Image (cartoon, rainbow, N blue to C red; front, side, top):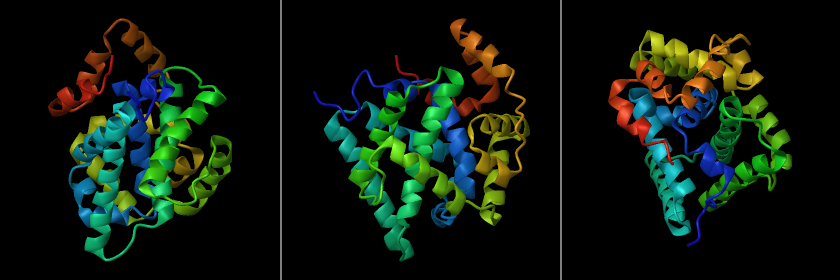
Length: 252
């Protein structure tokens, strides 16, 4: 059976662990709040009203692509395209191509950053493999002007960071919604976690310091995983109502 992502791909390793996925979306949550197209998420109202629910909905689509046979992955991508088409039709405007590229670029960047934070440095070939998967997702969705290789993507990613991010009223409100739904303590953990993976441009716009309180915690967390105690930490730091969904993110 042919799969969209090969069974031994590094991408399956990245997207097969709950803690890596949570860091991917912690970083993306920070950067997405700054994106100049974030108003589209306010048009639907889904992200500000239920940011955690939106997270798990997005994760489900991403994992369907990563772990599904080729036809199933294509069906998931086509469904995402249809959902976005319906939103565009309802609003009477088109989501700009650069905004689609930005979302793909976030998934590429944070997949690499989260795995390297919690596991090990990736080789250039492995980074290229991560890029290729999301490049194929973008091409299937009809996103234009995607660089064909990881090496060619790097300067384009830097240009997008410089051109497509700003702190706006949407940014401020979205972080307020994160705090409202997570609670003050978990929100603080989110911020400290974001500092570990976001690029300098995002830190600058969000007025993040370079130091994270979680920096000394990460090595201890890695040890806790070896001792099978990481779920104790997750149960403390994550809302209880999402426990089952978080557990389901781990793929043997």
